[in-house]
Length: 194
Image (cartoon, rainbow, N blue to C red; front, top):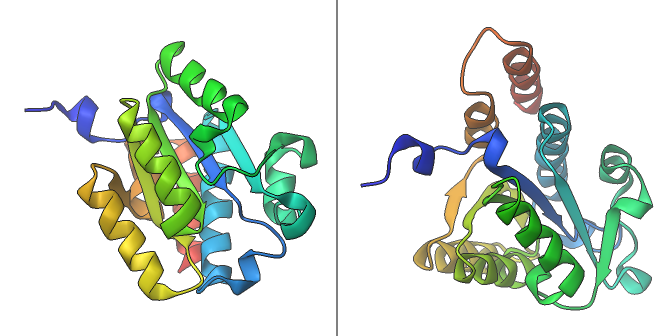
């Protein structure tokens, strides 16, 4: 039986990957405005808690850069890694960064938000699980163009050992207790999300 440290998401063990939330792709995604708001709240909290952030962009020449609000939170265009592979783990640079953080400071819990759930998110998550990482996909900060593909993507990931969470679950697990500045900041974000 796993102890609590294996079940609960830890800010100290987390790294965050935001996959392909790009200018020309995001508007075609079901519930895109809600997904973006949740992703912004997660990235803001990760920044405050010192959680490493990786941002990928699928073929940015055609799909544009990461949407501006997330670009600004991530530190600009230089923070994003361009790729053509669907799985971020098939991109040597991204895989090296993820695995390096997992091995070095023991950040073996990878939190994923992004699009599309049934393509890039799915393939990335499955590749990470195959490499022994704990993978958490934030369901309300993830999407697909079609709701059926979104649901099938989540179902398949769950079957393969990916843990599906909500943004609120994630944020409160990161802070772990009330009465701290981090808790107050997270509480304000959660209330603003509605």
